[in-house]
Image (cartoon, rainbow, N blue to C red; front, side):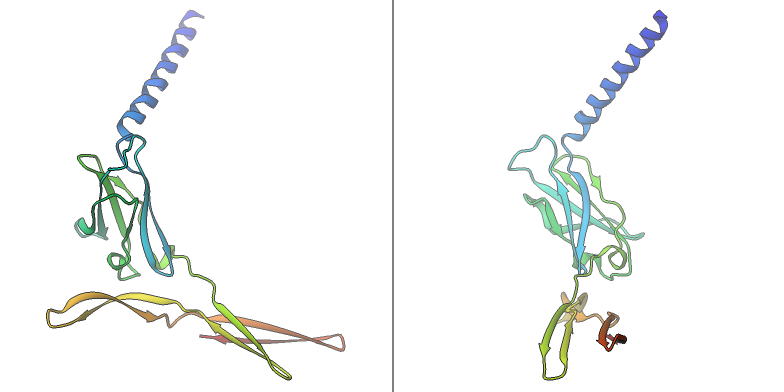
Length: 189
């Protein structure tokens, strides 16, 4: 009986030691590093370390599948808890990772991010214009895909946007006349 009590107390101390160690080693690192992407505009976000100051500087690097880590110059030594990595996550059919650290700290890593899979596509804008015997429906998806282009004498890389060619909407119109329902389907691309 005494050995069971002793073992339970030892397990409690081990758990407390583990939790204190976890807090001690993680309190100086950024927390929950993740990409948030809407319409292929991809921004890395993180929560500040548990023990943080207003003057905390963050450093961001990103990795394209099987290549080396690259420093994001605009997000090197920043105070913000986000970094726009839209241009760095092109092409959109590749997968990426990112990492963030504070000065002299350990890196905190994001999970793998694939823009073509993980971006959230906004709903289209729909404008209805009533007419005498019909309604004009205008659908504007406005989805512009970021891509890199090279311009100028030094062939510098800039971010440009092209309309996404593969967006498709199905509009269903139901007309009730004399208890009959007629459904008209058409697609917009």
